[in-house]
Image 1: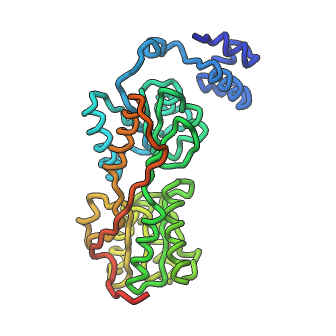
Image 2 (image 1 turned 180 degrees about the vertical axis):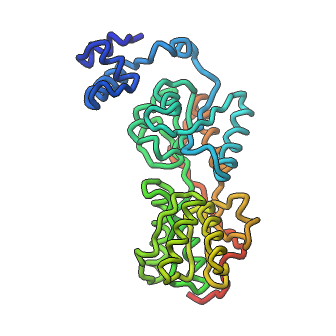
Image 3 (image 1 turned 135 degrees about the vertical axis):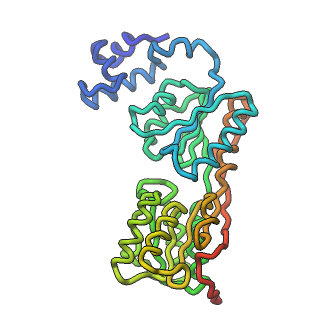
Length: 333
């Protein structure tokens, strides 16, 4: 087994420098840090603190790495992962990626503290994910598309879902449609916006940049974005919120300003969280299979750990859920 002295020698640095680099110290330059990390990866070096784990062939634990452990979206996903994990006699660790490269989540990946991991965390970089992927340590990603022998993908068809949402508004007589987005650097948001644009283009509707606002995938963000739309004094006929949390924030903003949903403006969300059918009016939305995505992801990990061959890409479909937040005035297209 390689030691830190071996790493230092290969990287051409002092042992102390190698130690600083592997412990994310700010005492050394980024270039030196990357050089040491590359040497450690080449030698398959792991820190001594985990030597006892390395002696075992497995940990009987799966990690689920999420951007945020709070919020209604994640509960169904976690439940899907938990049910399959438990039925296979394994433990589940769900952890937040807050903290980026120095987070506990990254340590689980880089130091192989678990037998496999599922990643839905936009602040875990592609570089870290690819560095961590290796034989005997399968990774399933839900929020990006990476080409690697040991990385597998479970995607929801976000493009089609975004198209369904936008076309539903168009079919009900709306041709002035805003888009309230999640973080611009998130994979899901990019694909839902692509679906929105595809629907506008397909039906010959001009995209209006002033009607694209960021809501950060949070209820508070949706509330703020909606207030900004209201302040422009030129409301669209409909709004596609890229998730239900933002749409629910938007509902509150409109209520505070005496604007009626759906008589004055129509809104549609994405996700179909449990709260969506209980708000007033009940939210029309795009349902994505959250439980199924979690269950399938961890099922793939168990197949891989058993030595089975599986496909690298899986895509799950979305479904339009009609409720009461879109004014019905269907037109022929």
